[in-house]
Image 1 (cartoon, rainbow, N blue to C red):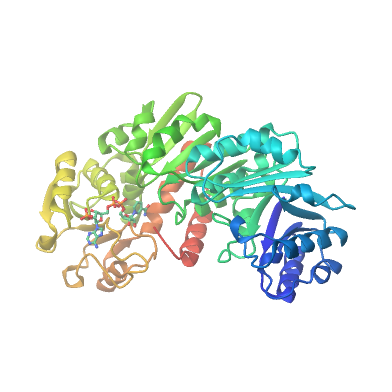
Image 2: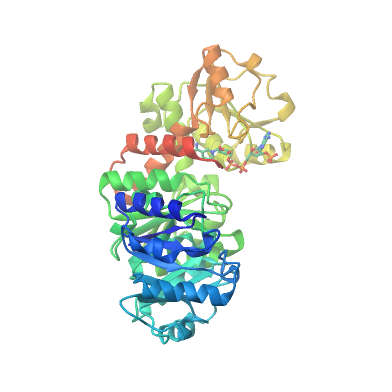
Length: 499
Ligand code: NAP
């Protein structure tokens, strides 16, 4: 069950949000009394409540907003119990002093905003012994393994237990809590009004992650990155899984660079079925691959991992996706499959990062004469040496004409939508212009290229194709391309901090 936290300054707003949520099928809400400004009227909130509630009044030291006396806070919680609140949240240092009464169920909770405590079993036993109907532990995750310890605590407990890791690293516990047996997870009313670090909006939890249909049989996929909060892959993959009726969920895993080895060593403990891999892990994950496809070996980077028993298969779908996108734009789809020419003879790749390397390899493999240019010439030279192509200085990128221009830099990406990495006056109608940036889809470069009459390929096309190839690898069936494309477009339209 998803419990939606309501934190509003006025009683009438709290009541209105509660009604709205019940009208939308939400079964449980948490009324955060500490958010109310002025005198708190518990009876008013409970009297005509449209559905069950957890009553919580959190002190500042526990991450809340309560500024008044502890006596007044405890009086409110006791009043909530007397008034028949469905649940009341009692922190572990006060639970013993607030006796059980009537039908109100007791959630005995512990919060730690610094770390996930080392011995969760001892903590859990202590909380359970305080006449708890439900035990709740919410603790900051500093390491992906904290999530595993938290989920394990839920699995091992005999008392119903909510175990959540806070912060970006802890997001997987919020999505997987129910899979491990937790009676509920918490979500926010509004994505912008987060009541605890790492919380997810309830619509996202319900509609995108399909929290209520996640069971122990649900397979776990995800994207591993740092940062990961801006990744649009969860929207795209979860939409595809839902449309295809596949019992799997796709989760964002924030894993700092120095923790990737331990994270992958623990893959079977989640257990993970597959991962999209992005910055900064595309090269590091190769240390854990037991099977690598030839493209991964030549590029030296993977963006896809598949876990089967003890095997970890690494693939790179970026290069194939880039070439498929170009081939489709040139109306020579066969070329992508037949390893024949693409219909362009020369290409200039702007940038010398992971995307540039994948695109340069893919183009070279199709017989295109590739030149790489980058702000940092040494990086362009390094790619040129690996791929077996030319490099030119960034300042000289307009000197020679090319059949195809590929932007593999972030230039033009939101919010810098007025920038282009290639001057308009050097664009020619015979050119194919491919911008790997997907947010926005129609970058300034794409718009200017269309203005000149060039054929264009957008980053949305490439992004959807690389995700679609992953879908095929993982699920062995054709991906719902239109669903993925629509999900990406919706996500980019609403994204504030794109990658
Ligand atoms: P990366 O490894 O960080 O490389 C970025 C490259 O862009 C570097 O060569 C960097 O130059 C250059 N660069 C950055 N800012 C620049 C600027 N203001 N002017 C000129 N050059 C600049 O990143 P990546 O993984 O290759 O990704 C690059 C872009 O590709 C992303 O922003 C993303 O939009 C796109 N991408 C799209 C897809 C897709 O599926 N559509 C997939 C992957 C990536 P320096 O070396 O000098 O820093």
